[in-house]
Length: 217
Ligand SMILES: N[C@@H](CCC(=O)N[C@@H](CS)C(=O)NCC(=O)O)C(=O)O
Image (cartoon, rainbow, N blue to C red; front, side, top):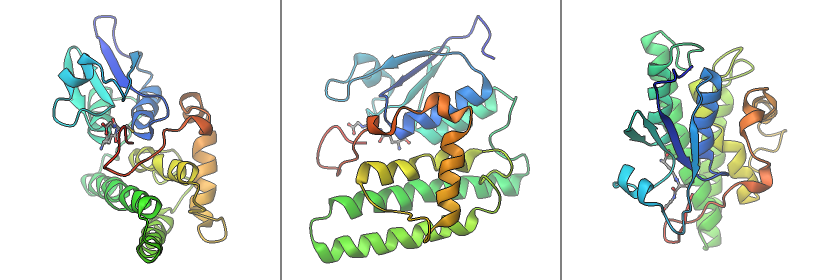
């Protein structure tokens, strides 16, 4: 728990999967925080001050020290509040968890955006094929109920975006016959008693958009 001397602020926009990563981590740790909803069409001075480099939410501010990038924030939360660990303790398993979390952002998220926004049909099909290939790696990586084992961990929190991509993109990304484990995982994770306290109704997710238009998610 954050002590009464601590000030914990989170800037975000409800419906952003990147924000929800941080909220799940805070809920798991039982950290109280002040939530400030931003407006991506009219970014607050606080957002521009605290994340001048990317000008993106989420931004986490702990005792006036700002941190950006959702996965960096989740690691910081895990390092700061030691109860209910998010990353494994073994260095090799920690490295693997970071590898898959990065894979989700670099491959799955990037390819999903591409497969939605590319206009050329051939290229769109190619991006979809590559996305399916990437998701197949995730499917094979899912060895237990969660990526983290019996309980969810860093990769699960990173992967919260994967079913959201399906919703917002209107893609049948993982029909259960193609990705049975991912499909079951997404139900288990979203229905988890901590996670479902944080996630908004699926209709509230922000639309992802190509890098040219604003605001983007
Ligand atoms: N890599 C960032 C991505 C965050 C992100 O894409 N945030 C979007 C909202 S979902 C944003 O702030 N967009 C504003 C903009 O692009 O101007 C993270 O993991 O935190």
